[in-house]
Each structure stands twice: as C-alpha cells, then as structure tokens.
Image 1 (cartoon, rainbow, N blue to C red):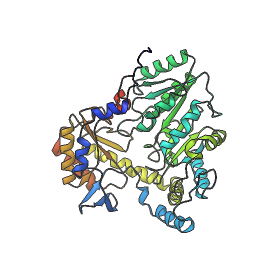
Image 2 (spheres, helix red, strand yellow):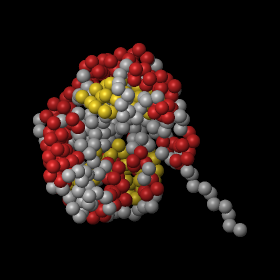
Image 3 (cartoon, one colour):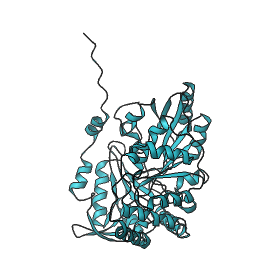
Image 4 (cartoon, rainbow, N blue to C red):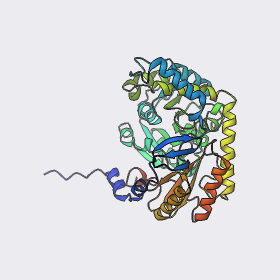
Length: 430
C-alpha cells in the first residue's frame, strides 16, 4: 500500500478563509466600485446622482483627458474602426511601430516592445528570461527567482510558472542584508538569480532599484523591475522612477516592465530589454504576443499622442504640478500619510482596524471624496489602508478638503503599508 501523499498547500483557499467582509461592505454601501457617468477634472458624477472628487484614478498626470489624446482616438476610429483583430505578428495598425519608435526615444539605448498590459509583459517575458532564451541575458545552471515580498500580485501569482524553471524564494528589498544573503545562497548553489521587484510600490514605498541592480550584477544575476506606477511621473521625457534611478540608462542586467495605462495616459504595457535581438525573441515566442491581439486601435493612437507629449516640454510642467500637489497634501496632513515626502504619487492613511477604515471611508464619501479602500490580503490582516492617488489635476480646494476631513477623523498614520508576509499571495510560510 502506497504512502498517502501530502496535499499541496492551497494558498488561494487560505487567503479566502482569512479575508473578512469589509470590502463586501464597501461595495454594498456604495463606498467603492463606483459607476461614473461624467467627469470634469477630478470631479466625477456618479450613477446615484452625487458628485465626488476622486483620488482613485492612477492617471497621475491627467493625460487621459488631454485634448491631443482625445483627438487621436477620434481620428483613429474613423480610419480603422475600433479594432484590428489580429495578433501583432500577423497584422498591426501603423500606430504600433510608431509607438515603439517613440518609446525608444524616451528610453535611449533600450529596446522596447509593446504589450496589451503590464501583467502580460510578465507572463510573456519572465519564462523567456528564466529559460535563457534572451540573448543578452544568458542563464548559467538553472535560474532561481528571488521575489520581493512586496512585489505586485501580477508577478507573485506566476510562482507556479517560475517553479517549472527553478526554485523560488522570497526576500525583503528594504533590508539589504536580506537581499545579500539570498543572492549569496543562490550563487553558492551555482544558479543564476533573477530578482523581481516593483519600482514605485502600488500602495507604499520606493524600491532601491539601483542598489539591487548592483547586487544582482555582482552575483551574476538579473533584476526585473515592474515600474507600472513609476512611469511618466519623473525623469527626463517622463521615463519614470526606475529608469531615472538607474541613471537614465538600462543596465545590461536589468529588464524593465512599464505601464501605458497609468501616468502615461493611454492603455497597455511595455518591455524594455537590452537589445533588439532580445525583442525579436520576445515577439516570436512570448505567448501574449503570439496568441493575443494588439492594444485596441483607438488606445494605440492615444498612446502615440501621449508619447509625443512625453517628448515635449509639457511633460515637465505636468510633473511639476503633480509634485507640488504631493508636497501640499503632505504639509496639510503634517506628514502623517504613508509615502509622505517621497517622490511617489500615492499617499495612504493606515488604520489599526478595519472598522476604523470603514468609518473613515463613509465620512469621506459624505464629504464628496472617494478613494481606494484596502483590506487583507492587500494589507496586514485586521488593518485597513485608504489609498489616495494624486494627480496634477487636483486643485488646492480638493486637497484641503481631503486633509481637513482626515484631520477631523484622526487615528490614522503612515503604518507599515502593504502586506509583506507570505500570506499576501501564498497563504503559507516560505
């Protein structure tokens, strides 16, 4: 009689069982999941007839309402209709090669490739990186993925795919000793480390990408950065947090994934690799490109218009407005919000209980302010975080109303930010 097999830990069931009804309450009470029927600037009209200032949208520079993007969408629809339903390898609108040429100017020395989303960049590129298929990124022995505990869920959830190529373990990017120890262990085993991190955290923090790139290089490994929230908000031509922090050039051991759907103002995601030869492999073998369609034509045209703005002086003006608004809110709240003082467009009010977070969301909605309420598994179990996405479009009055309402409520702080334990995605210890 064979020995009984040990059941594989079911991380999703564990997460489900530990998740409270707090988010359900938000939906039921109309505190999130808002249906918007009109907007002007950051003021939106909701389906129930009320209006609110939104701190939800991740379009940090307000480019999604720029007239150049709107006009590009109308023109593209007249020329092509709404969609060219084909994989990019078989048929593509003229906007796609134009966009990649413009991205190459925004990111000099790097080779870009456009995807339909940042998540699809991860899904298409990381298996190729792990398999040693990218010419500029050879893999000695087998790869070993080192995943930052606060890396975005779109990378964390691919762990089962990573394990088809080699081991996976966690480290803490905020702790240099943690990264050093993890890299040393991988090299001692004769493996190639592949380090996965965010650039700007989706809830809290800035990751030290330049330091980690150096550590990975010393260990003969690679750094893969998801800078979805950092694109456009900083740097020359809106190159973003990570590329700017890396010195305005892509190191030979770094792969960068970015978003066209947040600060950039359009839709989709993109890859930056070391050489055109890497991109040629990606175009030929990355599943989302081989078996999926391109970005919808109107949004591809909007991306081109946004890229042109990035290459103009206007992008600096929009960045200055964003950072002025961030500094203003920090001053009005006395530096008590998460990310206060950081070059991040995200601020957060952290509460020790879900009940306090819910109470605050209700009062903010009454005052005409909506935001993103987060509970476990996004933040540690039992706590809550209200995320405020700042924009260059927010007015002084809107920022003052948010600050005065938070001051009236009190009881919040910067906290620890997003959940960084193994429960965030796995539900069991590593």
